[in-house]
Image (tube, rainbow, N blue to C red; front, side, top):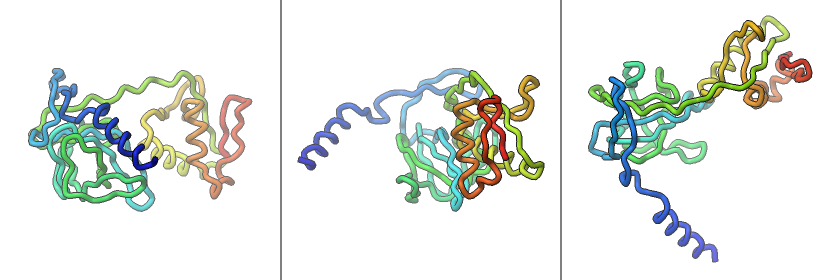
Length: 220
Protein backbone atom coordinates (compact mmCIF):
# COMPACT_ATOMS: atom_id res chain seq x y z
CA UNK A 1 0.00 0.00 0.00
CA UNK A 2 0.86 3.68 0.14
CA UNK A 3 2.54 3.47 3.56
CA UNK A 4 4.73 0.57 2.44
CA UNK A 5 5.76 2.49 -0.68
CA UNK A 6 6.85 5.46 1.45
CA UNK A 7 8.96 3.16 3.62
CA UNK A 8 10.63 1.64 0.55
CA UNK A 9 11.30 5.13 -0.81
CA UNK A 10 12.95 6.22 2.45
CA UNK A 11 15.10 3.10 2.48
CA UNK A 12 16.11 3.70 -1.13
CA UNK A 13 17.11 7.29 -0.31
CA UNK A 14 19.29 6.09 2.57
CA UNK A 15 20.96 3.53 0.30
CA UNK A 16 21.32 5.61 -2.87
CA UNK A 17 21.73 9.24 -1.76
CA UNK A 18 25.07 9.80 -0.01
CA UNK A 19 25.43 11.84 3.15
CA UNK A 20 26.98 15.29 2.44
CA UNK A 21 30.00 14.33 4.53
CA UNK A 22 30.59 11.08 2.68
CA UNK A 23 32.71 12.63 -0.08
CA UNK A 24 35.04 15.58 -0.54
CA UNK A 25 34.16 18.47 -2.85
CA UNK A 26 36.42 20.40 -5.20
CA UNK A 27 37.11 24.08 -4.50
CA UNK A 28 39.80 26.65 -5.26
CA UNK A 29 41.80 29.01 -3.16
CA UNK A 30 41.81 32.69 -4.09
CA UNK A 31 45.29 32.03 -5.51
CA UNK A 32 43.77 29.53 -7.96
CA UNK A 33 45.00 26.28 -6.39
CA UNK A 34 42.56 23.37 -6.34
CA UNK A 35 41.74 21.86 -2.95
CA UNK A 36 39.51 19.06 -1.68
CA UNK A 37 37.35 19.90 1.32
CA UNK A 38 35.00 17.93 3.55
CA UNK A 39 31.47 18.97 4.56
CA UNK A 40 32.43 19.66 8.16
CA UNK A 41 29.91 21.83 10.09
CA UNK A 42 32.72 23.06 12.36
CA UNK A 43 34.93 24.27 9.49
CA UNK A 44 35.12 27.73 7.92
CA UNK A 45 31.71 28.45 6.34
CA UNK A 46 31.57 28.03 2.55
CA UNK A 47 28.25 28.49 0.75
CA UNK A 48 27.62 28.55 -3.00
CA UNK A 49 24.72 30.56 -4.47
CA UNK A 50 23.24 28.36 -7.21
CA UNK A 51 20.07 30.32 -8.04
CA UNK A 52 18.55 33.77 -7.57
CA UNK A 53 14.79 34.42 -7.45
CA UNK A 54 13.08 37.80 -7.74
CA UNK A 55 10.08 37.70 -5.42
CA UNK A 56 7.55 40.57 -5.61
CA UNK A 57 7.21 40.63 -1.82
CA UNK A 58 10.51 39.39 -0.35
CA UNK A 59 12.72 40.95 -3.04
CA UNK A 60 15.74 39.04 -4.27
CA UNK A 61 16.13 35.59 -2.70
CA UNK A 62 19.47 33.78 -2.99
CA UNK A 63 19.29 29.99 -2.90
CA UNK A 64 22.49 28.43 -1.65
CA UNK A 65 24.13 25.18 -0.64
CA UNK A 66 26.31 25.13 2.43
CA UNK A 67 29.38 23.08 1.51
CA UNK A 68 31.18 23.53 4.83
CA UNK A 69 30.75 25.26 8.17
CA UNK A 70 27.59 26.91 9.45
CA UNK A 71 25.63 29.96 8.31
CA UNK A 72 23.78 31.69 11.14
CA UNK A 73 20.90 34.14 10.95
CA UNK A 74 21.66 37.84 11.53
CA UNK A 75 25.37 37.45 10.81
CA UNK A 76 27.82 38.86 8.26
CA UNK A 77 29.61 36.89 5.55
CA UNK A 78 32.02 37.83 2.79
CA UNK A 79 31.44 37.45 -0.92
CA UNK A 80 34.95 36.33 -1.80
CA UNK A 81 34.68 37.03 -5.55
CA UNK A 82 33.68 40.65 -4.94
CA UNK A 83 35.39 41.15 -1.55
CA UNK A 84 32.20 42.67 -0.17
CA UNK A 85 30.48 41.94 3.13
CA UNK A 86 26.85 40.79 3.11
CA UNK A 87 24.68 41.27 6.17
CA UNK A 88 22.32 38.32 6.57
CA UNK A 89 18.81 38.51 7.91
CA UNK A 90 17.12 35.20 8.77
CA UNK A 91 18.39 32.14 6.92
CA UNK A 92 15.65 29.76 5.87
CA UNK A 93 14.73 26.41 4.45
CA UNK A 94 12.91 26.76 1.14
CA UNK A 95 9.61 24.90 1.07
CA UNK A 96 8.00 25.47 -2.30
CA UNK A 97 7.37 29.21 -2.57
CA UNK A 98 7.69 29.73 1.17
CA UNK A 99 10.73 30.46 3.34
CA UNK A 100 10.80 28.75 6.73
CA UNK A 101 13.23 30.74 8.94
CA UNK A 102 15.71 28.68 10.95
CA UNK A 103 18.46 29.53 13.38
CA UNK A 104 21.23 28.24 11.14
CA UNK A 105 22.16 26.22 8.06
CA UNK A 106 24.91 23.63 8.44
CA UNK A 107 27.17 21.82 5.97
CA UNK A 108 25.02 19.82 3.54
CA UNK A 109 21.94 22.04 3.90
CA UNK A 110 20.24 23.80 1.00
CA UNK A 111 18.50 27.01 2.02
CA UNK A 112 17.88 30.62 1.17
CA UNK A 113 18.46 34.16 2.36
CA UNK A 114 16.69 37.29 1.18
CA UNK A 115 17.87 40.74 0.15
CA UNK A 116 21.59 40.22 -0.42
CA UNK A 117 22.85 43.39 -2.07
CA UNK A 118 25.92 42.33 -4.05
CA UNK A 119 25.86 38.54 -4.36
CA UNK A 120 24.75 36.84 -7.57
CA UNK A 121 24.38 33.30 -8.87
CA UNK A 122 27.66 31.41 -9.07
CA UNK A 123 29.39 33.25 -6.21
CA UNK A 124 30.71 32.05 -2.86
CA UNK A 125 29.97 33.34 0.63
CA UNK A 126 32.42 32.64 3.40
CA UNK A 127 33.85 34.13 6.58
CA UNK A 128 36.03 37.22 6.67
CA UNK A 129 39.12 35.00 6.88
CA UNK A 130 37.87 32.47 4.30
CA UNK A 131 40.13 32.05 1.27
CA UNK A 132 38.31 29.32 -0.67
CA UNK A 133 35.67 29.63 -3.41
CA UNK A 134 33.48 27.07 -5.12
CA UNK A 135 34.01 27.28 -8.91
CA UNK A 136 30.97 28.58 -10.76
CA UNK A 137 29.13 26.25 -13.13
CA UNK A 138 30.34 27.07 -16.68
CA UNK A 139 27.68 28.47 -18.98
CA UNK A 140 28.12 27.84 -22.72
CA UNK A 141 27.61 30.60 -25.24
CA UNK A 142 24.38 30.63 -27.22
CA UNK A 143 24.55 29.13 -30.72
CA UNK A 144 22.22 31.74 -32.23
CA UNK A 145 20.98 35.22 -31.31
CA UNK A 146 18.00 37.36 -32.19
CA UNK A 147 17.47 41.09 -31.98
CA UNK A 148 14.68 42.85 -30.09
CA UNK A 149 13.25 46.24 -30.92
CA UNK A 150 10.74 48.22 -28.83
CA UNK A 151 7.95 49.79 -30.87
CA UNK A 152 7.78 52.97 -28.77
CA UNK A 153 10.68 54.89 -27.30
CA UNK A 154 9.03 54.92 -23.90
CA UNK A 155 9.21 51.12 -23.76
CA UNK A 156 13.02 50.94 -23.89
CA UNK A 157 13.60 51.59 -20.19
CA UNK A 158 10.77 49.27 -19.19
CA UNK A 159 12.15 46.41 -21.28
CA UNK A 160 15.71 47.05 -20.06
CA UNK A 161 14.61 46.90 -16.41
CA UNK A 162 12.64 43.73 -17.01
CA UNK A 163 15.51 42.02 -18.81
CA UNK A 164 17.97 43.02 -16.07
CA UNK A 165 15.73 41.42 -13.44
CA UNK A 166 15.34 38.25 -15.52
CA UNK A 167 19.09 38.09 -16.07
CA UNK A 168 19.59 38.02 -12.30
CA UNK A 169 17.41 34.93 -12.14
CA UNK A 170 18.85 33.23 -15.21
CA UNK A 171 22.59 33.64 -15.88
CA UNK A 172 22.22 31.72 -19.18
CA UNK A 173 20.55 34.85 -20.59
CA UNK A 174 23.17 36.90 -22.38
CA UNK A 175 22.40 40.43 -23.50
CA UNK A 176 24.55 42.72 -25.58
CA UNK A 177 24.95 44.69 -28.77
CA UNK A 178 26.10 42.92 -31.90
CA UNK A 179 27.20 44.83 -35.01
CA UNK A 180 25.61 42.20 -37.26
CA UNK A 181 22.28 42.11 -35.40
CA UNK A 182 21.97 45.62 -34.03
CA UNK A 183 19.82 46.00 -30.89
CA UNK A 184 20.25 43.89 -27.72
CA UNK A 185 19.96 40.20 -28.52
CA UNK A 186 19.66 36.79 -26.85
CA UNK A 187 19.35 33.08 -27.72
CA UNK A 188 16.23 32.01 -29.65
CA UNK A 189 14.61 29.46 -27.33
CA UNK A 190 15.62 31.32 -24.17
CA UNK A 191 14.23 34.49 -25.69
CA UNK A 192 10.91 32.87 -26.50
CA UNK A 193 10.54 31.81 -22.86
CA UNK A 194 11.77 35.12 -21.47
CA UNK A 195 9.49 37.17 -23.71
CA UNK A 196 6.51 35.43 -22.10
CA UNK A 197 7.91 36.11 -18.62
CA UNK A 198 8.63 39.72 -19.46
CA UNK A 199 5.26 40.34 -21.11
CA UNK A 200 2.39 38.82 -19.09
CA UNK A 201 -1.20 39.19 -20.26
CA UNK A 202 -1.64 42.34 -18.18
CA UNK A 203 1.06 44.04 -20.28
CA UNK A 204 0.20 42.52 -23.64
CA UNK A 205 -0.29 45.93 -25.21
CA UNK A 206 3.38 46.67 -24.51
CA UNK A 207 4.84 43.41 -25.76
CA UNK A 208 3.00 41.55 -28.49
CA UNK A 209 3.49 40.44 -32.11
CA UNK A 210 6.79 38.56 -32.14
CA UNK A 211 7.83 38.61 -35.78
CA UNK A 212 9.72 35.29 -35.97
CA UNK A 213 9.57 35.10 -39.79
CA UNK A 214 11.84 38.12 -40.15
CA UNK A 215 14.32 36.74 -37.62
CA UNK A 216 13.75 39.54 -35.10
CA UNK A 217 11.14 39.28 -32.34
CA UNK A 218 9.58 42.75 -32.25
CA UNK A 219 8.16 44.23 -29.06
CA UNK A 220 5.06 46.37 -29.50
